[in-house]
Image 1 (cartoon, helix red, strand yellow):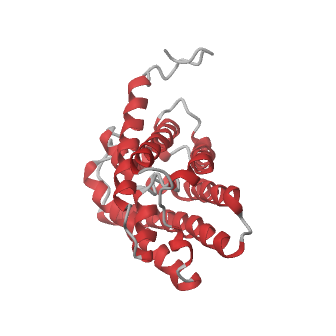
Image 2: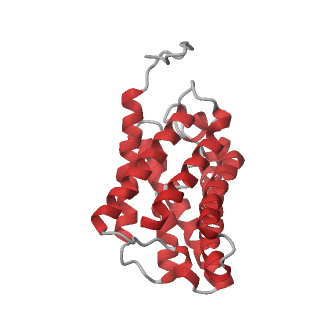
Image 3: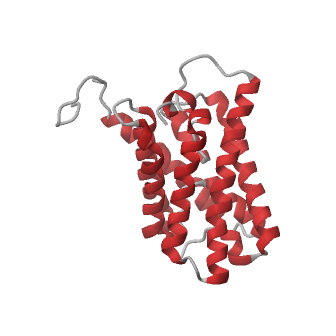
Length: 244
């Protein structure tokens, strides 16, 4: 994962060829498919069997993010999330010209995974779609906050040379699991428009979908901006009090 910053998360360097961009988008699609298929599948399996529980579902989401970052992060940057892609671009760490292709790949993969889950398991647990159990204003705020922290961790381990690249998978996967553990019962802990959009369409219920399309983008952009604000440029500083 030491190359995650140079491979999908910086606007520097020449533009990829059409073949290279297709490879990156395919990698994004595979990672996003795995995220939705395993994570939402875990929700459906638990609803049917009761064998996983909330802890098991949360760990499934965190683990699949961790392993897919390790698998394809060096190819595409391992966003798996339109909000992350937009936030990287807003922070100048990803070229805007590639944003539409990345988001199309992420959403297409999420839809494919969701409809496959429906075909395999039936319309169980609304195909793992997200819905708030608290007021909409509070739910929006929760999604903004948890996505803020997710993006704050992502941009730190993915783009800062002082962070150890090999920790990206565990750090980001751990953040996903942590947020799912405490916020899952409140909002479903989406943090990802594609993760919510696919199951909502497959289940035919988009009642509160606007919340899960908007809040993660707001939170991710704020998280990226916050890290940019505190990041320092002294790459050679290794003192115990940090780089400031």
